[in-house]
Amino acid sequence: MSYSPHDPFGLDPAREVEGAEPVGRIDQLDAQGRMVVALMRGAQIAGKDSDISKVYGQMMMVFERHARRPLMRHHPDCACLGADEAVMARFVRLAARGAREDAALMAMLLIRADIASLAVSLAEQLGLLIQVAARVDAHAMRPHGTYH
Image (cartoon, rainbow, N blue to C red):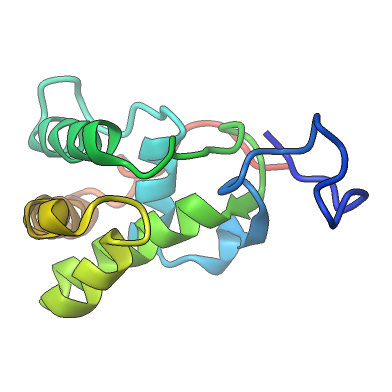
């Protein structure tokens, strides 16, 4: 999914959905952020039964069930970084660093406030698992495919 700035006032009924607006580029993220975005876009980073896949699946189930609106993702090979993707990458990064209150604020941009603490706990686990996996085998943690 890509964003077109040709309709800045939302007059075109076929305009892109909120959350997909590009706010940067994938290459501006750190390795952990790129992994989170790759997971959002459906990349198979780790094995289906890996801890990363399980925790990511649980976290996304929370977001899907309690989201204020559907999360938007760009195409797996897109070099753009969408608004929702940027929020998720930052959210996981903050949680993994132990900044739980800041992470909860980020989560509340996307989900109900009463669910934010659960999402923060899962994001913390995910971020730490990604960090450990990247240290053990950095090559295996690269998303497959190229960005244009």
